[in-house]
Length: 280
Ligand SMILES: *[C@@H]1O[C@H](CO)[C@@H](O)[C@H](O)[C@H]1NC(C)=O
Ligand SMILES: *[C@@H]1O[C@H](CO)[C@@H](O)[C@H](O)[C@H]1NC(C)=O
Ligand SMILES: *[C@@H]1O[C@H](CO)[C@@H](O)[C@H](O)[C@H]1NC(C)=O
Ligand SMILES: *[C@@H]1O[C@H](CO)[C@@H](O)[C@H](O)[C@H]1NC(C)=O
Ligand SMILES: *[C@@H]1O[C@H](CO)[C@@H](O)[C@H](O)[C@H]1NC(C)=O
Ligand SMILES: *[C@@H]1O[C@H](CO)[C@@H](O)[C@H](O)[C@H]1NC(C)=O
Ligand SMILES: *[C@@H]1O[C@H](CO)[C@@H](O)[C@H](O)[C@H]1NC(C)=O
Ligand SMILES: *[C@@H]1O[C@H](CO)[C@@H](O)[C@H](O)[C@H]1NC(C)=O
Image 1 (cartoon, rainbow, N blue to C red):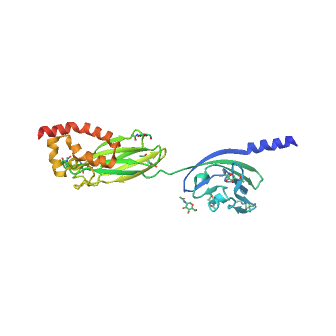
Image 2 (image 1 turned 90 degrees about the horizontal axis):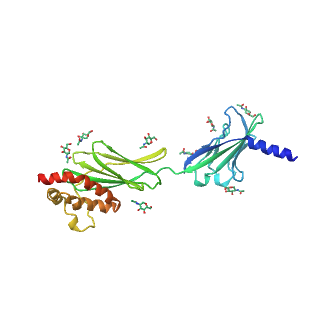
Image 3 (image 1 turned 120 degrees about the vertical axis):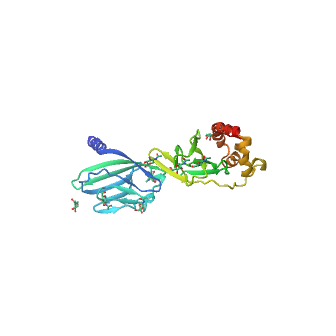
């Protein structure tokens, strides 16, 4: 008697064929494969949640029952041909091990397990834009791309590609800044930030335009003279133009993070500004 029991236990263990891993997105549908041979004619299908073997969907003697457990009520579809179970409108609690036990009409029995993981889809990144006033026939645009998602990488793309750009990435990877000089003759320049993680990615595009008007800012008036004075100031003060209004506007919008990026730009600009100085 005891030996028989042990034998049965061993047999049952041997019949557990595989543990499949399936991943679904929060709020989406996911299909758990039964693993049944497509040539099989299934006479019994029993899906249960593994830890305590609570049945959630069954098919016995031609009768389907998919409203067995409150947590899955109205969210299940059982394909009685394949034995596959579809869970609709996934939530985080659905992430666990499932077990399917099925018989074919010849009386063969198989038990398979499926491990379901539920992940959240990547959210569209947000782009904050700051535009300086018109200077030297164009304007500076600073774009900061960030996301609410963790562990994502950002990439910037510019169309057309002949726009002068400068990239900096936050060391934490929580945002990526791009600075570009837009020529006033260039219109419809598109900046696209793509947030990616593993095989998934999602993009957001903006097309900022040079604008003559500058938003009033809370910084002292001395730091934000009107654009005309600023433009003539370029030749006179050289690098001071940055302090004149660009940095004021940009700092207002982005705050601390930008200081690093801005230092780099200043470094890059210095040679051309010096040229302007000697010319003037
Ligand atoms: C999920 O399943 C429901 C019900 O069958 C369907 O209406 C919906 O379009 C499906 N959603 C997706 C993202 O496939
Ligand atoms: C599957 O089995 C059912 C019940 O035994 C039978 O009515 C049906 O014809 C079979 N279908 C196939 C494709 O063998
Ligand atoms: C079985 O486990 C599920 C998930 O952990 C739980 O919601 C359910 O109440 C349990 N059922 C029983 C009878 O313990
Ligand atoms: C069951 O799955 C098979 C194969 O994917 C499909 O052809 C069939 O239409 C499905 N049946 C139902 C009721 O969804
Ligand atoms: C950049 O490329 C576009 C089209 O590819 C062209 O029309 C434009 O003149 C170019 N601008 C500069 C400054 O080279
Ligand atoms: C990086 O993350 C740490 C901890 O979250 C934070 O204290 C620090 O300010 C962040 N650095 C930047 C440049 O955002
Ligand atoms: C803007 O573009 C025009 C033609 O594409 C070019 O002649 C001019 O020098 C550019 N201005 C600046 C500031 O780059
Ligand atoms: C985004 O994903 C698509 C396919 O899903 C791929 O073709 C593309 O190269 C990816 N882009 C980036 C920036 O990873």
